[in-house]
Length: 395
Ligand code: ADP
Ligand code: ZN
Image 1: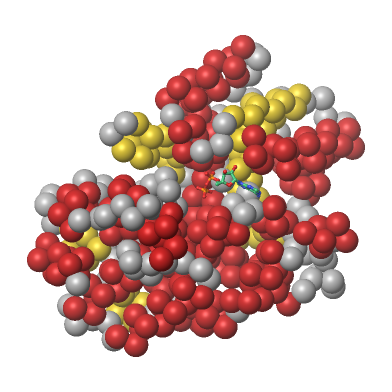
Image 2: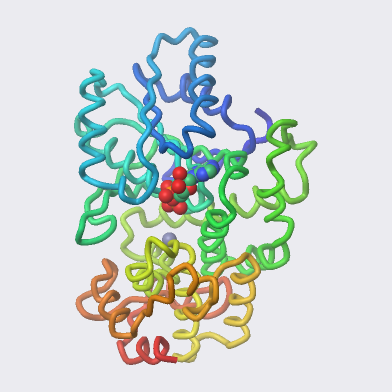
C-alpha cells in the first residue's frame, strides 16, 4: 500500500491514515499485532455498513499468512447509553464465555462510543489486553481515538470511570467517512477547526479556503469507494481532506506525546470545551458535542477578547469558518433552537456546570485563551475569574 500516511505518537508510528485501508489493516494486524483471537466490536449502524468487509479481510489475511487465529465479532446498540457499566460487563462476560485470554486483541470499529468503551474493556480485561482503534467518525478520527483516554459514563456524568490505555494502532480509513451522515461529519469538523485555532494559522487558512472541496470529498466519496482512490486518481478534495485530518491528528498526537496525562499542554485541546461542555450538559443528546464546542469556541474567544488578549477580527474569522461548515456559533442559532426545542441555557446553570469541570484547580476556572488564530495565551489553560466568564455568557 504505497499511499498511506503514518503519524508518530508516544514514540511509535502507530497512527495510520489513508483511503481503502481495510485489507492493509487486516494484513498489518495479523502480521504485527499478533493475537490468538481478534474480536471486532462495533455498533449495529456500522455493522450493517462495514463489518463484513472487515471480517472477510481478516480471514483473508490469516489465510495468506498461514495464521490459525480466531476472528469473532460483537455488535452493540448505537448511542451514548452503551457507554455504561452494564454494557461493559455484558461484553466482558461474553469474552469470558468465549474463553478469550490475555492474548486476545480487541478491535474497536466505530465512533467515540465504541472506542471509549472497548478501550476501557481492554484496559481492565485480565488486567489489560491489547486493542486497536478503527475510528469510523471524523470526531473519533481527529479526537477520541488518539491519546489513550478510555471511559464509560455514570448517572453522575460522562467519562467519570475510565483509564489511560493506549491502543496498539489507530487506523484511519477515510473511506469510512463516505457513509457518515452529514451532521456527524460537521460535528467532527468542530474539533478540526478547534485544533487549527490553538495551533496553526496555516491549517486554519486551509480550512477557511477549502470548505467546498472538503465537503465534496466526503459527500461525493461513495462512487470513489467502488472505483478506488489511489495517489494518482485522488481528487483535490480527497487530498485536502486527508491533509487536514493528518494535520489535526499530528497536533493531537504531539500534544499527547509531550503530556500524556494532561498536566498542561494537552489541556489546550480543551479550547471551546469549558463552556461547550456546560452547554452540552443541558442540551445533549439533541445537540451534538461538536455543535456545543463550536458555540463554546466563540464564547471563549469573546472571553479572551474581553480580557484584552484577542482581536475582534479573529473572532469574526473563527465564526465565519465554523458557520461555513454548518456549525452553530451562538445559542440563538436557528437550527440549534430547532434541535433543542428552544430549551434555555440560563447563565447560572452554565456557571454551575462549569464548576464540576475536571480541569479546574479548586474553585478557580481554567479556560484556554487564544491570543491569535493559531496561538494560545499560555502553553496551558489560563485561570479566569467568574465575573469575566459571567459577563461573556450574559452578553
Ligand atoms: P462520536 O464518534 O461522534 O463520538 P458515536 O460513536 O456515537 O459518536 O457515533 C455517532 C453515530 O454515527 C452513531 O449512530 C454511529 O452508529 C454512527 N456511525 C459511526 N460511524 C459511521 C459511519 N462510518 N457511517 C455511518 N454511520 C456511522
Ligand atoms: Zn471534544
